[in-house]
Length: 407
Image 1 (cartoon, helix red, strand yellow):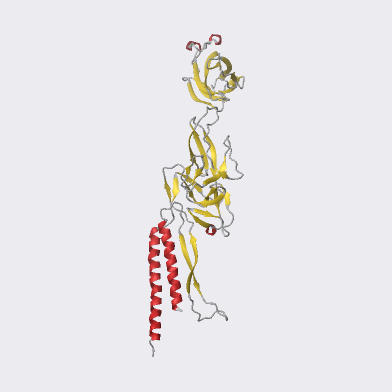
Image 2: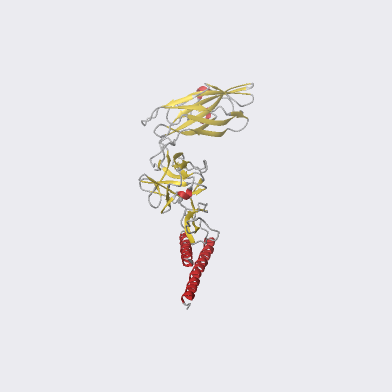
């Protein structure tokens, strides 16, 4: 019987060496998860049940279990590389066939899809033209490279300080070409519905002054259009919180380039009048011209943000992750891919950093979790086990030879 025991031990040690060799060979494979050989003893069946003197007949390989522990995160120069820090798998699609992977070495194909080295497409939630994510069914992520649609300006907000030391000027004599007819001016670029730029100039004229009160006229001018008396601003003795008439001043102009009419709402309600030089503390508007996609980045929650040449940004998509109740039940397909198995449970889909799912790190990759030092020690142990089992066979052979030689 020792021959069978020794042979089973040789086979087990050989299988363990194969597992170790596979781990070592994939030490540099991104997203690889090392395996562990698990063994069980073997007993012969008995008609009368077990016996206290029953001797086992060897060992067998009961399982090769992958170890889904976290690998080290290494930074890369590829903005499309994504590493998972925590639980979860990338959900990949190959013509509708879904597989799962921890290898985040991605690139963009000619159709704009984010793919891995085997052309499997990364899946997630895709945003519409307005940047709103469709969080229903997942889809293959495609980066839309069309120009960002312009948005016309509707609101202009400014915070200025008007110098209370200025003398009063007659409002009737205002001439935008004559700097002596107004005290101060400022300008901001606005945009029409086609994304064309128009300069909005605002002029401030102190027209009245009394004890505890000062009034300023505000004129606006867009491009070559005639100036418009937009509003008056009246300050009390504190120089803050001016009373504006009308309360919501507007200016409307019609571009000559085919764009629709633009109505701008002006808000200078936070302005002040102190005894210091004129200053523009803030000046903004809510429009922008068209822009081309200059690049994109992936946030920790999987959101892919596009950056455009007009300084704007927009959500393009969001990467989703999948997790399983029993990851060890996944079926390994090779090529850094797993498929859902009978023992893995159904894939639990979600966005990164929700539930039990980890977070993403862009421009990074997850290294193999193989510990080379431990594997080399295991290799020595497996070699010694192989030698020991070979020795039992040799010893049994000597005993049998002695028996044969009896006379």
